[in-house]
Length: 485
Image (tube, rainbow, N blue to C red; front, top):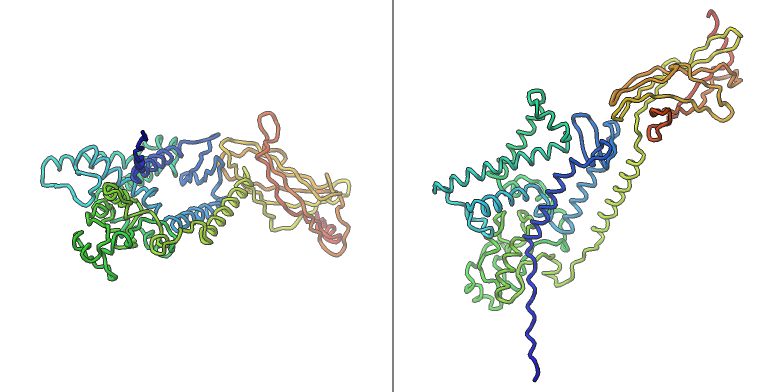
């Protein structure tokens, strides 16, 4: 007797909403963790307005080394733009703090915890605030959000004021009113934005929605309604034609849309995805989940899918690796390489050398030699976290080794962390470096500056080389400079 095999049930796909929640959790953990990740006192990322430092990848950069910031900003903006070309406003729906905070407040606090809202799937129906119990719930929701907004604001501040300093400042708030003011301002904004402004921020305030219309193309992946299967709910003038399924079927008997409007009621920005591409859509894919549930109960595929216009309207395959995407990828890789190379050449001390206005001075020694001196202004900054003694060595051209010497300072000098110290440095020679009767001779030299550790050894990372010149006078100037001295 032959056995009849039952057809396997189609495995239910994980709702996009649940995947977004996982993404929100990961993003939250990352944003809360980054300010605390340090190595040898350097942060993974910190733009310190307090100490005028940039920490990037556990390397500390002084404000004079902020040449990396333009590249970091380009990576950020081009990354978001490239992501938009590929996946629409996926940043808005999956990463943007505004969306994450609204989900926490509306779906978690108001709906799941307090029951102020009835269902997550109905975001259009506002709570009935005429009921006293709802007013109490609303107050509790606001208080909970104020606490969370304070944590979010503090986390934001930690990217500019490191936690180890932030908590010290908070112990004496009257001495750090700027930090307190910024913290209070961010909290106030988050409370107003999330509780009162809501998704109107995405629709009316955020400029990103206007930029996206320029970046989209026919292969951009987004939440999109399939009118070939569902039927045209709106006409060419974007006017709604049908509100009931029977009216739609009377015109288009093959239309599959049930006119349940589950995709409408679940939308956080209050749009109807069946109307076509709209700037307000943040690609949260809530409408995809809603339609998947409704059509799944009928044994059919969702009418709203995460796809491209090329795939839906032209029945073609979405081209993910198209020239525009490849171009963004190449530029981002190049920028990342540039940042890596430039960051690897970071110097752990800053040294500027300028020649004094007087080219040289000449004195005659007791044994009749000419002592030629060149003076320089050295501006040195210790960018490390501890005090060091700094030394200078002179590296002259080949053949002049040991002939140009350091006269002043006579020994090392200490520089405290983040302190800029100006020093007059004098080089001199009593040797006849050049025999030229027609012109002064400019001799290229190299200045080596370095620091020593407690054992008297050179610290490898605190060594810099600077190119300079030593001017040796022509023969008649040697005599002229020493006359009357």
